[in-house]
Structure formats: C-alpha cells, structure tokens
Image 1: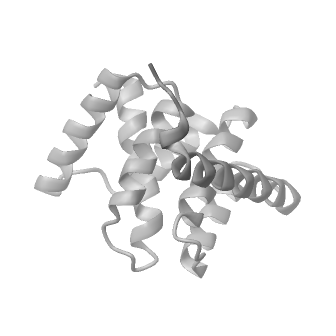
Image 2: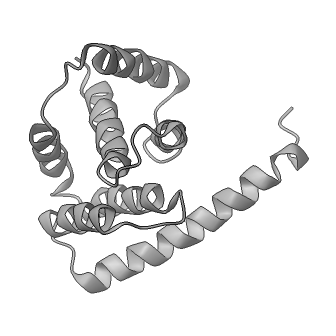
Length: 152
C-alpha cells in the first residue's frame, strides 16, 4: 500500500478513536473533519482522499484493521524525528478533541500520551492547545460564513 495512503488511514483511525474512547461512538463530524485535515494539513489531494475513504469504509465494514497499539506505534515512529509535523499532528488531535466543545478525561489522556511519546513537555502542549483553540475558532467562523466566499 502507498505509504501516504497508509498514513491517512492511520490518521483517520487515531482521530476517530479519540471520539470513541470518550463514549461518543461513531461521529460523522469527526470523520469529515479528519478528511478535511488530511487535505488541508497533510497535502492529500482529492484522489488520495477518495482512496482513503474507500479503504477505510472497507476496514469498518469488515472490522479488519490493525490493532490500535500497532497504529499508534507506526504513527509515533513516523512523527518522532520531526518536531514540526509532530506538533501538527498533536494540534490536529486537540482540534478533534474540541469539536464537540467538551473535553473528556479520556481524550486528554490519549492526546497527552501521544505528546509524551513524541517528546513534548507540558509547556509545549499548552502552546499547542492555544493554537488548536485559535484554529477551531477560525474554522467555526469559516463554516458559519462559507456562503459569503465566492469560489468561482
């Protein structure tokens, strides 16, 4: 499998796990927002997003995907030597946590655990929470005012 597509699938699984562990179950908003983040933050094009969606749907349908611990290890190994992309990933996790405007202990623990694995200190994490909060507000503004944007 193409490594970029594998990354996208792992990214989706982790972001959706963030909601699942907080007893929110399947959350379409998280699914769509995670796909958006893959395009916006991780440079996936529309064809790659389509491939991720198709394969992810098959994994969900068959319940045939790697264990979360394997996905986590793969993602941590991919991110750990690059502080910039590690920070982007943690910020994305935080934004997904904030989607419903309610942070559960489970969401925070999983995010902090990833951040610790990637070598972030609490002060770094505080900065990433601040960045995520600003981005969340920007996204809310964008969504609320989307009809005002002329995309022709």
